[in-house]
Image 1 (cartoon, rainbow, N blue to C red):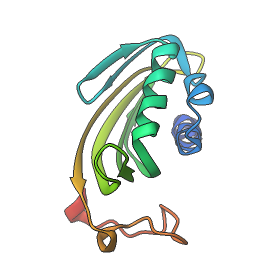
Image 2 (cartoon, rainbow, N blue to C red):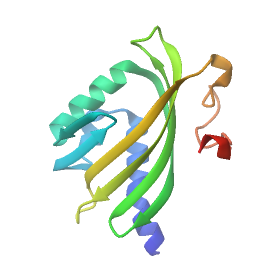
Image 3 (cartoon, helix red, strand yellow):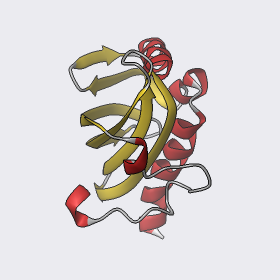
Image 4 (cartoon, helix red, strand yellow):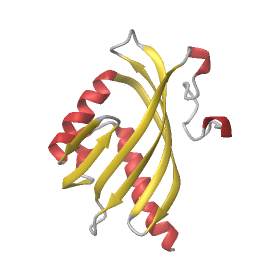
Length: 145
């Protein structure tokens, strides 16, 4: 039971993120939430909403998979992989590999998020998340952890 309660925020945030709706996603964070996304530092739901809007204007056909990596008390770590077409780089396909750590407030909203990720250019044939394949249907080998 305790595992399920701790895992629930992860499942809800994953569903929200795949909606790619910045306004709705921002509601899952505390008003003073602190973010680090690669080299970008921001705070507050308005800044999160603006950041996500810019992100998804650049990252087209975005498909994300996250897996629970570790958890304790009010903290969760996840590993993730996502693919997108880069609207600022000739619509080339890219895959981002990374880790995030999240800290939750008492009310269940996220109050801190840190993300480290690396983008790799991929060809059409190297894509994992193709039409008809769900992000969780793809076997990701240990070489990609």
